[in-house]
Length: 157
Image (cartoon, rainbow, N blue to C red; front, side):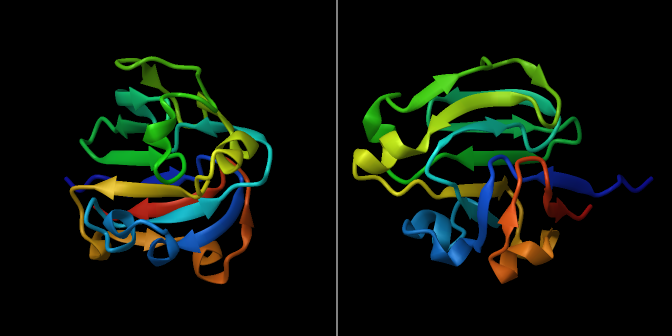
């Protein structure tokens, strides 16, 4: 039995970007895994669950959700934002929670992150997969605007 593909939603609104533009080589070189990124608007935005599953890890600046099939998705809110020790983030869910795609996980204060001298770009990474395992939505290559909840990429089974 072949499992269906896993659709991963955009966790925040903004301008879609290829992973190579992320100003952090760990993400840009896909060392954590393949994916894409979103440049969020200068506003407070709700970061949502891009897939349904269990909230495996939750930090104010990042979270990992694992689908029932075992696929993990990392959403990292900004670059070097771990150094802010939670400032600019308000958790709306807790580690261990079962979430549905679209549930709010963190409120992300983008202007506060920028004011603190950090890049607010949001990498969305598929863990333990290769680039060949995912299909990026057309909006990513074009740099189009996405809304939170739009189809962002697909993990092929």
